[in-house]
Length: 340
Image (cartoon, rainbow, N blue to C red):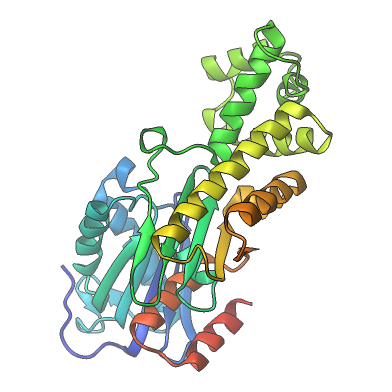
């Protein structure tokens, strides 16, 4: 366990962590918004390796960020056991339920990196990175789909977002599965014609859906390569394929449903509020998907302002920390300028 004796090395500062499934970013931020040190490492997957090993891997990245700032982080804290910062703001993948946040928060705080520690789902980092104040809703479509909302008074809206059992649909994995489903049925006659039956296998140099199904089933293609099919779905939609467009229209409906429910829970549905869109599916800005989404959101949440976030999520984690420390607006502006 790390020690938290004595003042932090960065008085009033924030140790910001954005840990996704595939990569982790850590930044040590001063109270005035200056980024003193930063480091990047691999993904954060406690369901795969366990909580303590996952936090141990995170510790190695924190150590490198501290070194980048000129501090030595040892097994019992930094420089004789003093914490690095006043506040750790850790936005972590796989912190989907409050009980998981609490478990991870205890494990992170035990490292002694800061006087106070707060763990939240990584979607909150994306939301905060995309809004000027902690107010609004974010819908993230990466490999999966998730939605959170927040207000300046600390109230939040969220969903379990752990897959089909929690009612989720879509994201890169869901879109690829749906495209494969329609393409398979089109080829064998059970479903309507779609160019997906040609474009999906062609992406892998295969001549039929049967060949693609066989390759995925027998392991000739790694399961992760299925994610490559989402851009193929986009391209097939761009060419005007009705089935491909119906899949994207359903994704727009799902994003709208999440955003509207979150806005409603926070009392923002009838007010001007930001709906931040993040993740690889949204950053692709597919024209048909974005047009249908704008139409659906306008109909159900006419005062919502949509924006695709381009800033790195670690910015959001750091801003959440500065919010908690009541840092002045100038600090927030300096931090945003660093990541601009």
